[in-house]
Image (cartoon, rainbow, N blue to C red; front, side, top):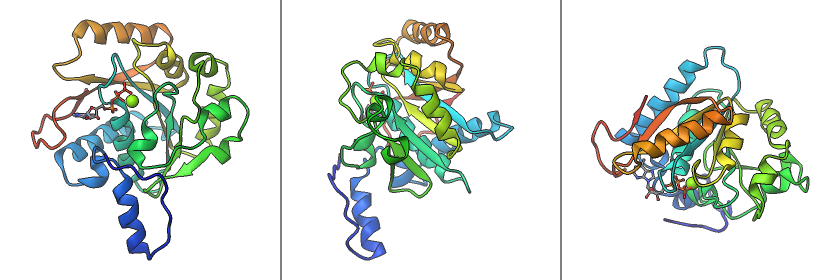
Length: 244
Ligand SMILES: Nc1ncnc2c1ncn2[C@@H]1O[C@H](COP(=O)(O)OP(=O)(O)OP(=O)(O)O)[C@@H](O)[C@H]1O
Ligand SMILES: [Mg+2]
């Protein structure tokens, strides 16, 4: 993984693109390999989500999974890039994994303030939002570190933040911790319009997926579907990703 602490726009526009590109994690295939099958699969998922939204209302989508390391954060960034490719579509990624945030790394951004500071009233929302390497794709990091993430997320301030983001963005994609590890994902999920459940092929036991579904729905979440991961991103198989 490439990690650049700070991106300074010092050179010509061409140089700037080259500098920024080095900072973006290679798993962001919609950016690094836009013609690849995995990138196309993320666009397919985007298209499914757009078709579910016939009234074209602003939408908050939470992404979670049963267990750790199933590909949630990578999916959030790729899906965000795919949405931002659509004309006149403004997208924001929100890192609500306050315990173990990773979107900054994936986006190649330096650690900064974010959701934690906004939720605790120490920073106005608009000051916490940052641009990314892609036009139309903004970012609200986790900030922190947050010791009491569940309390902070469940404090009643989170939903108004999402509502405020709906004023400026068409799609708000929210990354979360694993649903079976902590309650954070369920709390975030019930504030979202829909939840995507990432399932790692041949790794996540069916019983754990069913348990996660029960937890999310039990907390009032609207689970839209599952998104399968788990085939190496360099693979060119047509079934590398699936959405149903
Ligand atoms: N679609 C995918 N196909 C294959 N491997 C993937 C895919 N997405 C992610 N990975 C691999 O899984 C690792 C973990 O991905 P990621 O950080 O997105 O998981 P996560 O579910 O967000 O983890 P955590 O629960 O720790 O937040 C990545 O570093 C990458 O190696
Ligand atoms: Mg993650």
